Length: 393
Image (tube, rainbow, N blue to C red; front, side, top):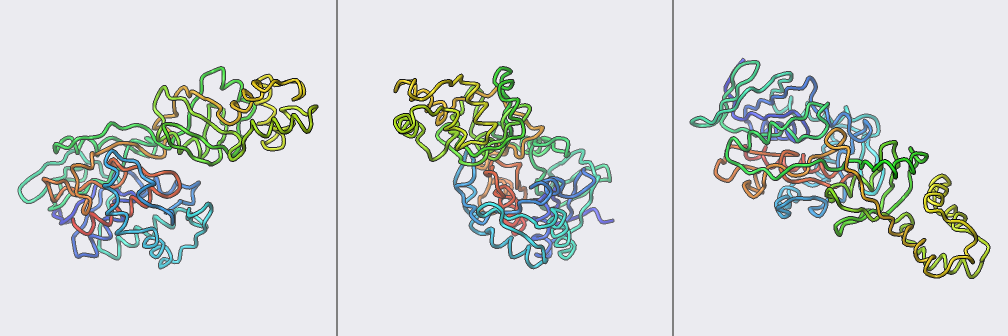
């Protein structure tokens, strides 16, 4: 087999395979290398096995980065509609679950098949179960040393992802390469990840394990109105995963258990109209039965509303509209959907993803400091950054 390529891409995930196809269609000789035994492992497990492959409402505002303007160029040049068109050309049936969130109707395997088919049509070679032992810069490009021998290329694209879900093969190799070539790496941490709780609160909430309820979760000036799920270890569900990307150790979450409702006004009105009714009865009208009962018991709300003074009603309302929770921590990379931080984008071209002083070295996808909200945005970044590099590498 040949050992000289125009482009070598490290990582056969969403960004890497997209980049390979685009570069291949330009007539470039492309090799994709990955140590995994399957391509697109995170694609396969995403969206409950049905892959939330994009979000029609994705905009730069849906991304976190230390350099927030960096993602604008790539996202504007390759939009959700572009990827949806590709999905439809391959005859993949899809459905919109929540506003803008597109999933495969059948299986995420179809997205991996799409990408591998595009690579095949473009003439890009994909090699799996190939460990990379070293990368060296050399005249005219790079030498990539692997368990299958050494390969040379003019352009090198690093698309090997972040640290999330190490059981899927995630490593920090991309960050090591960035540092090797003199790039700064923004400190990384787990994002879109469930919270763990301190023992006392965890015990109080244990009976609610598996129960979901709509909330509005806030932290550091950001908030998300989505479902919260109580687990045997803590708090999860879309609302918790979303706010986890903004939470820092030691922060307190403010969780509105009755989003869109003014509990103080409603309880005062109820006290006047139905003085014999209870807080538990009020909660039972708005929350799942088990949630209502648990919060009533945790707070010790007893007796009719007519027995509550105005200040006590205010305290009840605050506990409902601004439930303060100080998590013990998060589940970490073990279950995190993404890695926050990564290669500092101030050193990259927003048009091509190339390193400023090394125009033939590219970083794309999750390995860079661009992280999307939950709901298909991170896949859209993978497609957009992959296309940007594929058109330049």
